[in-house]
Amino acid sequence: MDKTITIFHGSDHVVETPVFGGGRKNNDFGRGFYCTESNDLAKEWAVSSLSDGFSNRYTLDTEYLNILNLNSPEYTILNWIAVLVEHRLFSIKTPVAKRAKQYLIDSFGINVNAFDLIVGYRADDSYFDYAEAFINNGITVEQLAGAMRLGKLGEQIVLKSQFAFSKIKFEGFENADKGTYYVLRKARDDDANKTYLKMLEKEVDGLYIQDIMRGGVKNDDPRIPRNLPE
Image (cartoon, rainbow, N blue to C red; front, side, top):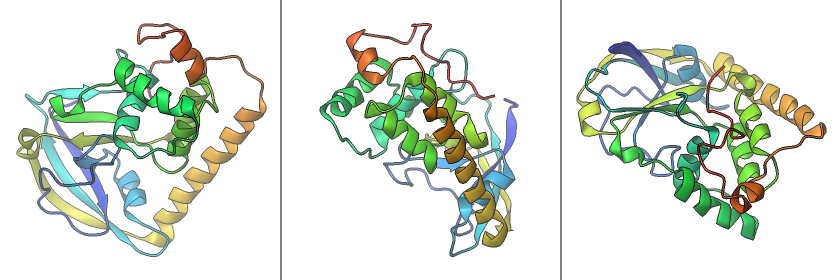
């Protein structure tokens, strides 16, 4: 990552001054300011089926920031999902899912609040459903990793600390037209769903969350896919 990067925040309004401590606590990585290095992706995230949005543009000086990159080789797909289940609200449908949530947090969790900046997948639309299916013992960890690579899943950059917020500078904004970007967003989601359903039709061997818990599987197990973007 270059020391100074350009990032974009999709929103239904212009955000000239991001506020430390804002945002919903049930976002993917908890409270923070959620951005991306893709202007087009920010525009997709900014719109809904009913309204246009804005892509806010910033420069961020990352020098001296303590950065957690969940897509680096040292982390697995289960580190990402452990962070996700700790912060997002999941549908816990079975006793297995309740145990799975705690096992993931205990065995693979990371204290994201110890970092200034987080880089990782965004659990948007279908992708959240895939994560939920995994903790409910519905798909294997290999299928989960495959699902995360469907539909050109977006990578997000999240400012977490007051220090990080002191390093961001507003540079302007662009309008995001719902007629263009909601169509793109929905097409991405639909394409991921179709590919995912085809993947589920194939009989596969692999590790379900129940297997992972029974086997006491940890982060260094070679069977756990690394959380790497393609």
